[in-house]
Length: 351
Image 1 (cartoon, rainbow, N blue to C red):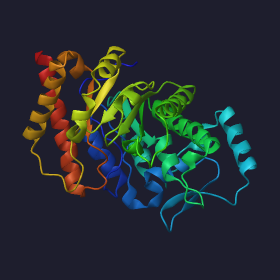
Image 2: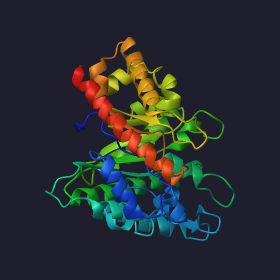
Image 3: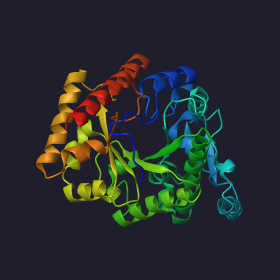
């Protein structure tokens, strides 16, 4: 695993901004060690998480009027899958790239980065919808999620792997190291009737996606889930970073002490979602958020985990994307996050 800057701050994905370059500069000015490229869904449907994942995948149809990605029942399935797997076998990353219309924030951030060798961050974080969430959200004409279609779900894992690899390759071209998160909000429903998938299948699909992506070059991978799930399940995949909403779900994460210890022992990082991102969440001061983080770290220490090790292998993020906040609330969240990162570094240095 790579050694990441301890307690660096980064973001999850969505933002409420319309100006991609202004958003990129805000992020670069504040999240200086590990900036992320901002998704700008308010600019249009194509900038949403699921449409961003659809390009290059077989048999997908974008319905801009309904703001949905659907299975294209009119397409020739055999021909579409054959063409798709030819591209996969050839590692044709360009087929799976994001266009400026789909990800204006990605292009803006790379353009705003200082020239290679001119300073700036060593790491840049990107993100793409995770295979399980994509296969849960996209449905056929019968209303059934393509997660029920094993052949299509397998194709989704391969396609999203190469979309992640394309992002990472573009980041590496700037002289930076790439961190890519698979965003898996649907896993907060794991174990319910709405997600009929086994623990073993989740681990297999995520492992295959990550392993396939790494065939195209070095990538540091994280999985983000903004709800409660079986955290030990995610910790069994070959991720480098587990991103969780610590503001709401720390109590459930700490139930998996052995899995957490094993994950940290192999060099894994925890990305703590400290800053609330729900517009209806109570307004918290920076001091209150810091006090909550301190108490959570000490709870892990009380469970036998080394406090210095946990801090050394932690990153800080918002609880989820900032897209549901107002632009001013999102700016405040980013600035607060940067300040919390500095507090964390001071604490670590004192140990």
